[in-house]
Each structure stands twice: as structure tokens, then as C-alpha cells.
Image 1: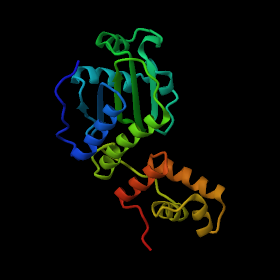
Image 2 (image 1 turned 180 degrees about the horizontal axis):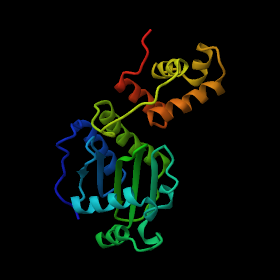
Image 3 (image 1 turned 30 degrees about the vertical axis):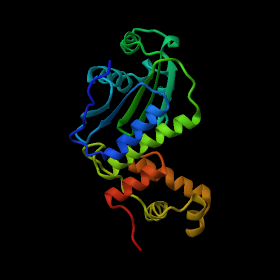
Image 4 (image 1 turned 90 degrees about the vertical axis):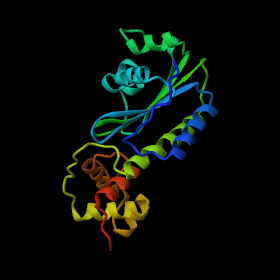
Length: 232
């Protein structure tokens, strides 16, 4: 089940970030894990203690037909979608991934998938030797470790769609985006621009749609990377 540590030669992910994530994974009692990241060319790169064949098979299931692995992923919102369930209790349609989990002898599996407008850009799969309950703090710790790597890759332009076309923004949308990048809250943005919070939120929704992101962090990172920030 456990193979040599896979590497991601095309993705310069700092070793410290990977070591922190691995330490968190081990500290929470997971026996094996795999982190997969989609590069600019669309190819997936793996890091972890699962064999490449096992991790690739699981991720193919979650990328192509996430509903086959866990109902939660059907409703995967713009936010990272978490799922965790006991393999023994999952419904059993014609599902190769679950067969594979049982063959490997894993009692429990957990995963996270980060989505952008083009689909999954990073995922984390973990396995436990026995069924156990994971607290919200566990989820936060894992998410923080994975997000640190994701943010590094976004800032470095290592992941994402090969070509990106941003719809034109209005002057007011540029103003809102600039203040967002500076760390202003919605209330602060509204006060600065002498408008209402509802109007600010309306502009933010339009900005997110045009940038192809779903939250403030994604908007700030993408705006910075694409040079969209208005400097006064």
C-alpha cells in the first residue's frame, strides 16, 4: 500500500510547507495520505505515501464523478469541500474506488477538494486504520496545512488554467477590489466609498464572478497576480 514518496518536479513547493502538512497528518492519526495538485498544463502531480496508482485512481473518481465517492461533493460549494466517511458504511454502487479502499484494508477515509471555476485544482486524501471521529479542530488543522501549499502555488502561478480572460470591471468594482486587497472589511469598504454594505456585497459578487474565484482570499491573490490592483 505504501510506496516511495512521490515528488512533484514541476511544482516548486517549499519542503517546509510539505513537512508541516505531513506532521499534521501524522499527528491526527492518519496512516497514509496523498496530496494532488493540478499544474498549469493540466497535469496532476502527487505527493504522499500512497502508491501513484492508488492515489491516481481515487482522484480520478473524485474529479470525474465526485458523487460516486461522497454525496457531500455533489453539493461542493465554491468553498473547499470536505468529506469523511467510513468505507464500510458507504453505499455501494459500481464503485471501483470503494473496492480499492476495502482491498487496501482501510477502515476510514477522509478528503478535501479545492475547486475553482475550472474544476478541482488540489485535493488531499487520507486514510485511517480504524474508524474514528475527527473534530472540527482536526479539519481546521488539515485545511490550514493544505491551504498554505495551495496559496503558495497560486501566488507563484504554478496552478490554474493555462489561459485566463478576465471580464472588464467597472470603476467602482476596481475600487472595491483595491480596498479588498488592502484588507478592508465589507463595512469598511462601504464607509470608504460612501455606499451601503449590501451594495458592496453586490459588487463583490460581480468581482468574484469575473475573476473566477469564490472568496476574498482568492480574489486578492488573483488580483495581485494579474496586476489588477489600482494603486493610488
